[in-house]
Figure 1 (cartoon, rainbow, N blue to C red):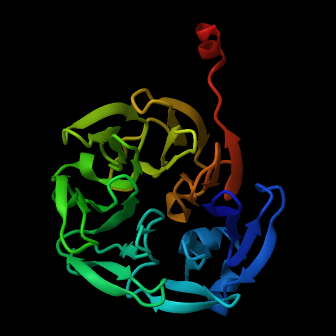
Figure 2 (figure 1 turned 90 degrees about the horizontal axis):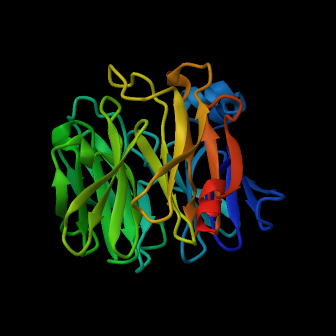
Length: 343
């Protein structure tokens, strides 16, 4: 089960091309729909290793403020309408955006960054926008000489859209737009420290983790008032996804991806979750070892859902030993010795 969306009332998840909904905090899940983009891929997706190899199944889902569901499967965007899901957009290349590669702003505009291999850098990578509840999508920006767009996220404090690109040093950048994607301001570029796959936003800072398979990775933050960038903590591997809970606790997850770029900067063959209560001090709180299958059949990683998080955190582990495609609900507690010291 892959968790996609969490809010105060609902948890949306999927297995293969089947969509499920829970309204009792994950105790039970009810089947909502089968997304049948292709009968052939639907059948292939029933084999877990084939699903991993070809990246099959429902890849991503967002619930819009209007209540409309948008999900991505079989290189298409499907939109809920009268209880059914209809394909409204077909990606020209790739499977769709990364998990944090699309968002919705406070004016109900949706943004989506293309993600495909683009190894020759000969194809412009597009940023798309929808202003009609996900029915149609238009190109608002084409970026040349990059590999792909990693993340497109809405900042609720500054009410801006943040964008991350990669992969080579010259292609890595972090920028934001304050006019719905018409113009962009860079906060940094030209280094692997600006290669990121997700952001976390607080009132005073913007956090990210570097996604550099061949170098030491760190958690960073941008200071809103001064524009300074602070290096906070060294982590064990490339950082992919992140989450912030209702109580303010923050999470970043590192990925086990092996020698994906010729060598590896990983400390071990594990995916880790790092957590912080104050944004400054980070602890490695849990990890799982990569399973025995090759990295081509899936990197060992942790997926956090979209939505509005509660005090509990929901996440899915993938390609990890004994916990492939496993949905967790966890509660973060202080370490016993920390509690004793406070007494």
